[in-house]
Length: 297
Image 1 (cartoon, rainbow, N blue to C red):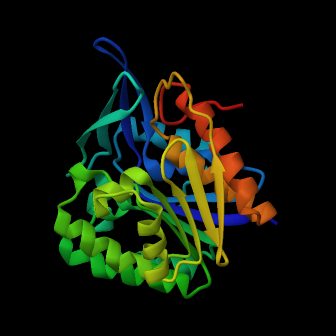
Image 2 (tube, rainbow, N blue to C red):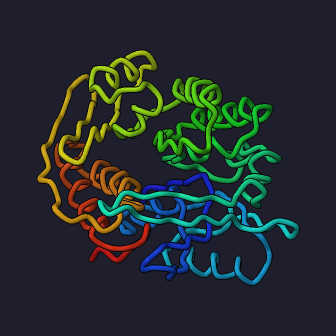
């Protein structure tokens, strides 16, 4: 029997700069990228989001179906549109984002519905969300959303959270507030060194260990940098050292694919060391191609 997982977040139109003044049109978004890279032989994949009702949004539904992602939880809002972002890469492949999503269908949806209704319809083994998911929420809706996540966890769903901090989407006040509210309910945590610098002003491994200890998170994965990756599971610490890639094309989606590969391998092996290795291997393949969702076969 397959493992059932629901990712919660926003998919958007991605315009990726592939040459001077030339952009490639595609569909992406961190939680969607993660869903696409999950092993289809292992998971039944659902996606909870909202999009518009215009012709451009119909392509989103077709894309999700092509990726074997169940669309039953994709809400259509006639008076809103899907979000848009432009991505440009520096010479080293690092990404720069420019967003148009403050009036998106997903932002409206997550501030006006109660996702606890999910537990009445489906039983999920895992729920996946990120800091970007949280950044969609207004101040007066974060507590309602956290309560919904707590209720889903009470149905025995394991909650997976990736910090995935985009500093332009946060005030420092909200970043601290939202993270401290969500972390007590997390079963599996993903974090990068970049995330930790944004939140705690350093990427020291001790800082990460203090976080997971404070919030009693028994399974956590920390990508300190491209070289050192760590996993913590059942009071044991695991580490791999990766070889640096000389020429990185595009880091978009690499962290999302990393998370998906780690989880895909862990649910089979329950071995953090093997899962770290598999995650790094997929991440390397993704950064050598342009775009967030790429063919890695």
